[in-house]
Image 1 (cartoon, rainbow, N blue to C red):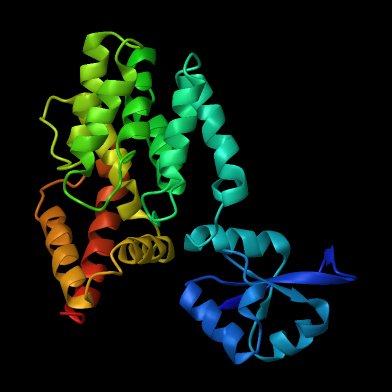
Image 2: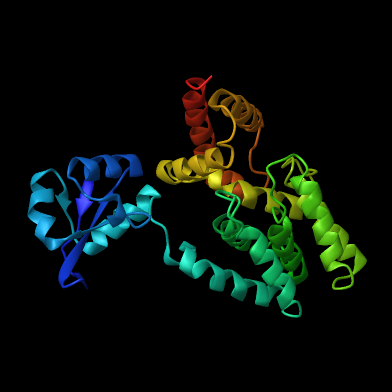
Length: 296
């Protein structure tokens, strides 16, 4: 575990700034920053911006000097880095462009769905999650789905958490919304398929022969296989959505979900998803389960 700092080369406020990061965890980074009296206001999602006047002192305190490119590579490898397209100021435009490619005749529907995904009570089931699922579908569906099937998968992703109230009815209500909004836009068969795909995200248990169902469910669960720091960020976002519950109640419910995933012979149903993500996901789930036992 290391704290890294790159040369102060970024001009702002009459001085030059360096980036301070951890190659392991945000908790380690925040702890170091607090010890060095660096204001939390200097934190920008995955790094601290520090003025050059602090550079030598931070190196003396243990920060390792690296080049800018080395710092970025370490941040990417750790899973902590947030790519520019995932930052709040970029997400809306990125997703709007994706919608215009998926269903260009329905811009108002795209705006409505973006509004749903932007609701303030969402911390994990938000626009970041939507873009992650869409990008995972892109990868999983390559050479596995034709153009129309890809459209249906993407629409299912857009609708799968369009209704998010934190209840067991969310997927059902989202599927109903898909039927209502897409009726008359797509063929009845296509509307039914999108609705059925949305419902699958309640159980993540598609039939063995349901190729599109496996692609969507694997894309929805891709987050489970991320590097430890990124998985921790995901778990903390989930906890925040249920912070109204006593900790032991949250832990019991969450543990039940994680245990059911670990009991599966395969968490991921597609060959590509299984090969790429299954082992990492199992490690992350087991690690979180051990943490949650301390909350019970």
